[in-house]
Length: 277
Length: 328
Image 1 (cartoon, rainbow over the protein chains, first blue to last red):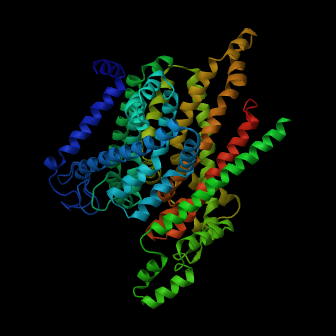
Image 2: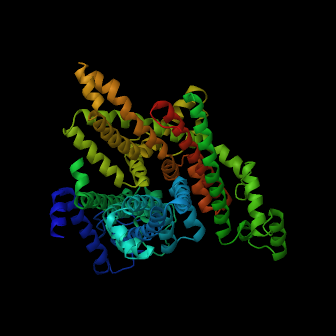
Image 3: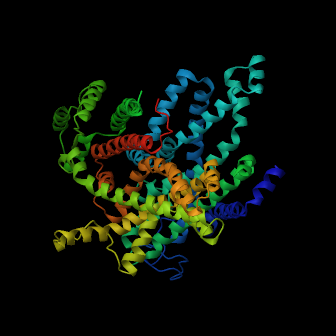
């Protein structure tokens, strides 16, 4: 662990990313302390500019506080990004592990399915899924997971292919371990590093997809999110630029921070890869 | 066997591989349609305000919605194969006609985006690779990091704020100034003027991507043995870069441009709805609000098929670009 941190720390940008992410997490966790009001509530004069009428970042066309929306929206983005990524990693591991471990027909079949999902244009597919299931946290998470697992499946398959003939796996077979135990208990822990790296980058992508869906009006109507704020503010672009601008900056900073962390994790977890470059 | 007939065999094999994917996509499409709560008749009835159950039953019969699922699937498959994608109740038009109407606008936007992104991406990547570790290199890296993290719709809105509302250089939305009744060249110029902001918005991400890829690809090629040979022959660095390294470095960028088409279609939904660009993406956005699932599914199906076709075309181009590719 100490060694990991030493290697991670070498990437300055990744440390900065971690700092930013902690700040955003803190913001999300304390949202109710600083802005106890429901972010959907109309709390003042509509279309006040930043620093006017007691609004830090202005208010939108209905008089909702933009800053409050951003703070509460942080929870939505991070939560959906994280859960959707976990679900898609789960699906990806399932497909990749069986495909790589058993090979042959199983591999053919599972990889054909993966290929189909990889071919389908993912954002339109996500739109379609959410539209059909009705917008809610659940449908958004499912839609993002369904369009993002093929990458994980391919990665896990590759790892399983290269690990399944190693000596330690053969030793496990010799002592009569079941296939499932070899897969989950022996091979999977050995390919966690690349999964963690791809997972961290997927959280960033998931946040971008979520914001895109919310922007198009496919967000959960009961939950404040950055994409929704921008979508609601776009008609007021001429008179109130701040409504769209600040939530966008929030997305940009969050996604940037997570991407930087991903690169740092890559450097720290795959040191050989770094040396080769 | 001569290479040309090998390529022919390879192409037909890839074509055959594409067919099951397309059929699978059609089947997925059908099940999504059925997964949706309420069918087209419900939507129509809801719109009319009141509809008797008898009338709704009659409508269902008319659209074949009273048949069992496998029959409906067979009918759906047959319809798609003859390019009948159903009826958009909202537009009161056949889906394929609607899509056909809007396709040109999207094709224009996507083509200009690819040309801009690939062209400038190659140029900037080349510059970055030639001036390694200078400030230009750092600028390109930071630019790439930021564009990777920026939501497309926000870039579009900010473009509108700065270049349309503040500077007044470009129109905020639409594809042409309909009220002006331009003809001939005036119309072309007008459309090009409207095209600038959507194209720049959509291409920024890909520009960053291709720049980084081109840079990495160039650096990889510089390390190859043939470069040492070329140097030993006494070729100038200029000739090595532009004649030898550049041509080889282009290959991965071409592949990537093909792979990215699916993502580009998704991006065009966002960009078109931001700029009210009257293409397929805008149509998809409108159909979302109208709950016009038939139309949305038609667009989805067409864009999936487009991706399959483009991937195939890129594979074939690749065979000709790189004679080392094994086409067995």
